[in-house]
Every structure is written in structure tokens, then in C-alpha cells.
Image 1 (cartoon, rainbow over the protein chains, first blue to last red):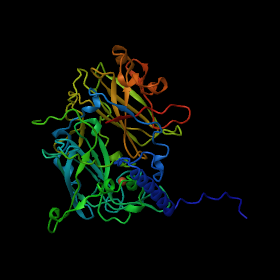
Image 2: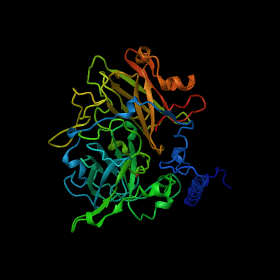
Image 3: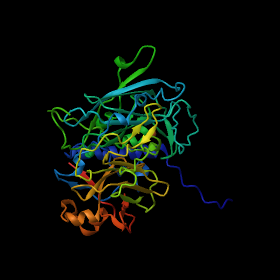
Length: 262
Length: 192
Ligand SMILES: [Fe+2]
């Protein structure tokens, strides 16, 4: 007979699925009670276990000061980017493996105004689901022709565009047999620091969606849909690449909007 | 005008480290600037453990109070696209620094003009939506002792936003994402 203590039972996907369902039911009840929709994840969303010790338990303190510095924000310019930055398939000697993909869209504020000349940063795994990061120990091959980092500035109409390859799904250790759906990480600046956004873009129809506590942390169904790009055949290029469209709307107030000019 | 619904936030995850930090991101003040101040500290979780995969961003007015910033935070090589760091002359007001393996960060900047604080945004693996907070600098506060936000807070909460002056031009500011039972959770802010 072994005296070795038993390993704790593994946290299964079905246990996480049940937690996800419970969170969704609780949210539906809130809506039924007449509370307004919630667009962003609850920072304490427990099915994503890393959140447990990393979210504040005190309410946020509202700042209602028209002079707050956060209503302005950093600016970026041509010295911050190079032409190669927005094409992740051309940053090495040869081309990376994977489905060549373009992702384009517009960055807008909540009034629908374009966010002009601001920095968009992306990072992603390669086609095998491996990041070019030393702490990624997923035993999938690195691609010597793919780093997975891109940048661009938005145009006058708020448009951005990247050429890349479609990232692969990858395993992580939130629970037993946890897999992330394919996604591209995005970082965005608005005209104010209050509009800062870091998020993830997903590809339509991924079978991992219902099992992923990070995507499901957005408990509002239509908000969750806004994280999924649309396949757009008019953006696909014959004999070359598949096209996706994803528009981004930045939350938060801004005091620095100038209606004309800039 | 129709108000658009915002794109939800998602965590920065563990692997931003090769994408977001840039050379000299933590030093908006030019090297050897006589007025430069260092703000450093740790990011802790609710068990009091250091958070080694947090990313902090700082935004502030220039010493003259200007809030327009300056582009060129990340100067690039025109020949090989490599990162050259900052240009050494323009003050952008923007800093970005990742915590190290001990959960520690340090930024070197210039004192903000017109306000006693630096604006801070915190990202981390495990944090599904970034957090806003502020570092109040005691010297700047002594010149403008009334601040609507600080005045609205109970003393133990208020204290979490005050940097400790450790020495000449050197300040300590720790971020606590959650109380560990001993230390107060940092005050985080919402802007409506
Ligand atoms: Fe990821």
C-alpha cells in the first residue's frame, strides 16, 4: 500500500464548462432584473483561475474631473513604425509556414469617430500554436521565419491592416486539457489614456469557443461576438491570402477630440 | 448619433514580453537629465507574492504642463527596422515597463507639470481588464495640497496612491492588485 498522498483531482474541462454556464446564467438573471449590459469581463471571473489573486476586491473609485490627465494620452508618429512592421510574413529571410491571412478594420471611439494616427500593436503564436517567447514551453515547432509581432499607425479613417499567418490553437494550464482558440493579441491607443485597450481577436467558427474561459469571461453574448472577426471574401486575394475584417471600438471618455483638423 | 458598443477587453496574457516592451521604454527622461526622478516598486497579488508578468504604462504632462506629448517613443532604424530607443530630446510623457522576475519595475521620468501625479495603467496575466491608478509625488503634492481624488478617500486608501520619498529624486510605489490581509489594496480608478 502506498503512503504517498494522492494528487488533487484534476480540474476537468467539464467542471470549467459548468462554471462557465453558471456565470452565464447569473449574467442572464442580471439582465432579466433590468440591469444594463456589461461589455467587459468581470476581473474576478473565476473560471479563468489566474484571476483569483489578481483582481481588486474594492470597488473602483470614479474620477469625475474634466481636468484629469487621463483624458489626454500619448501620441505616436512615423518614427515609431517601419513599413515592414505591418507585414508579419516578411520579417525574416523566408516566408513563414501557415495560412497567409490579412486582418483589417477600423479603430473608432464610442461616437463612431475614427481614431487617427494611433498605434496598433499585435502579437500571436505561429501556425503551430507556439509563441516565439522563451517561457512558452508548448512542444510545438518554432518557425524560424515567424516572430509574430506587428505594429502600424491607423490612417485618417482609423483603418489598420496586417498581413500575417493564421495562428494555431495552443494548450495552457488553466485546467486539465485546456486549449486556447486561435487568436491575435491587440493593443490599442485612443486619443485619451482612458481609451486604452488590450484585447484578443478570434477567428469565426472556432470549436474551442465554448470551452475557453478567457473568451467566455465576456458573459454578454453580443459583446463576445464583437471579439470575433468576420471572414470577408472581398478581402481575400486570389492565389495569395484569406481576408478577415475586425472593427474595434474603444471605450472611455476623451476630452481631446478636435472635430476638424488634426 | 448612435453610440457604438465597445470592444471588450481581454487579458494581456503571459507572452506580450517580446512584443510590447521597447528599448528605453522605462526612461522617458533623457539620460543624465538633472531633473529626472526615479519611481520604482513592486506589483503584488492577493497572496502578497510578486507578479513577474505585469506590464505598467505611465502617462503624464511634460514639466511645462503640456499634455500633447511628442511622437517618437520608439525610434526605429530606417535600414534594418531595429529599435534605436528614444531620440533623447523630446519628452513623450509615455513610459512602458514590464515587471522583472521579482515583480519589480523602475521608471525614470521628469516631474509632471501642473499636477502632482503620474497616471498609470496596469496589465497582467490573470487580469482580464487593465486597471488605472495614479502615483502621487509628495513634493508636487506639497505645492498643490488640494486634490479632489485624494480628498475623497479614507486615509488608509489614500495612502496607497502616495509614493514614498526614499531619497534624493527617488520614490517608491508598490501596486497591490488585491489585499493580502496585511497590506491595503491599491486604489484603482474608473473614468466615466
Ligand atoms: Fe495568446
